[in-house]
Image (cartoon, rainbow, N blue to C red; front, side, top):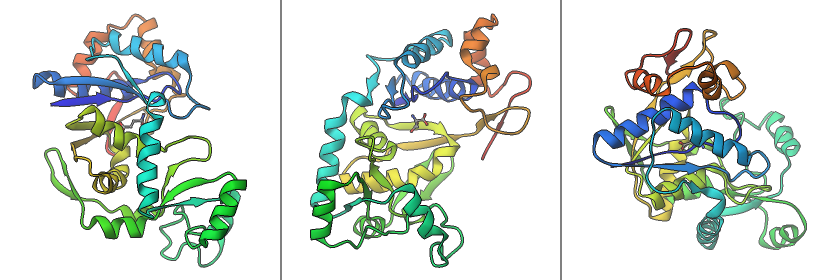
Length: 287
Ligand code: GLU
């Protein structure tokens, strides 16, 4: 068994991260397996070096040990580019030149969100551009790369994954529309990088928050397209504060650095979290 914890170094870790890390770590260690850390630092504009060191210090304070050096996504850009090339060669991705304002305007149009539920789905504006226009604009305009989700889902066929303790789940990638695989400002999206990395790291069990269940629709599709194995998934409940909202990086009171500074015992906290016992004022909730 091999699990991982994959913080994005964009802020301080909080109790929610601790819960996730503790569960993933315990799952591996209880089975005599391996536990890896991955630093999701692909977003150069938001990632900060100081948060990497701080996150590792927080994990050590919790008594979490990891195998090998942390893997950094910023060191794996060539792998993401190669996968994108592969999908491009199979006509499964296309360049998109739309700005946020373009997308908002077409979604606001009466025909933009036909079923009322697809407000955030990309309307497909650039999907039908001709080859000549695509090439001309690619040379001149900033663009991202989107997956042609209908074509991709048709190639992949029916997709399921195993949710630990709950059995098979059917992936519904079409609900996401043509998602971005490489951004204008970052060489790969979370979906592409995370799917490739989990496979390259040999992750057998993905343990992460239930806010990412929907992402698994997309990850399962990418696995099928790129010939990658499908791990087992466990999407766990999220840590919420007294207001019922899940913790965010701005919730300083729940930051691990804050708890540590207040004299808390990290190992005792980790043991409690492992048993789903949370400090007063915090509780677990499925989104
Ligand atoms: N870096 C991602 C996050 O912090 C990891 C998500 C995942 O575990 O796949 O949300």
